[in-house]
Image (cartoon, rainbow, N blue to C red; front, side, top):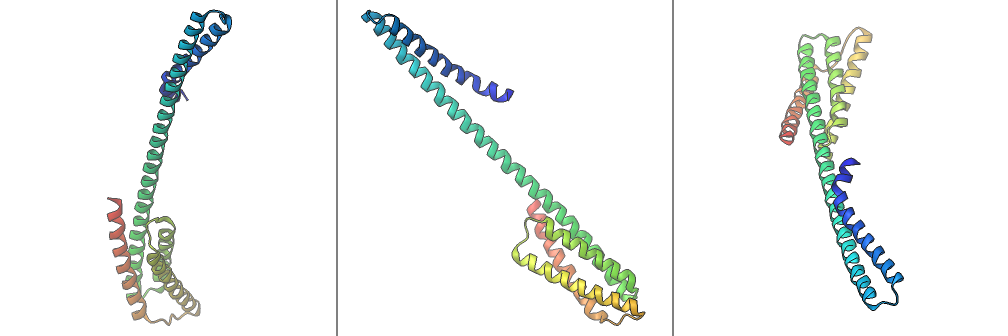
Amino acid sequence: MLVFARKFWPHSLTAAIGVAICSYALFKWLVHLDGASSAANGLVLGIWGIAFSIVGFVITILQISKTQSATQAAMKAVNELRNKMMTFDSNIEIQKAIVFIRETQSHIKIPTWESANTAYKNSKVSILKLAELSPDLSESDRKTLASMLTDISTTSDNIDVGLLKGEVDVDRGRILKGCRKHEDYLVKLSIGLQRKIK
């Protein structure tokens, strides 16, 4: 409020001076209705008062317009910064998902199914966060991530069933191929997001 007052008080003062002169001119005109010179003086003062008022009003409006433009520019900058931060966070989640998918591959090759399934489920959490956080994902990216999440969920469910039965009967080659496909896609997506941060 203080900043607003400092910015606008000179222009408001101009308008106030104009109003004061108009008021004085009207007073003089009413008091000296019988004197032609007084009436003329009052008229001149009135014209000057109106001119001061108009100038003060116009300047005030222009300053308000500039302030609104500055506010809009600030809002735009804040939104851009927020989007960059969200993109940065999205990239972190991609890196986490890639690490978990690589862990999954390592455990499947042994195989240690419980550890593999934990890592695969962790990758799913990071991919879910990525889908929610990133404002820069295209519709195609979102569909690919949704398909990836479905594949991970189905594979994890099958491994869970096998662990409960005491024997995991899944196609390791198919899971490893899916992991490599998911990893390649996430690496490409990460590169695209890094370009948008710069």
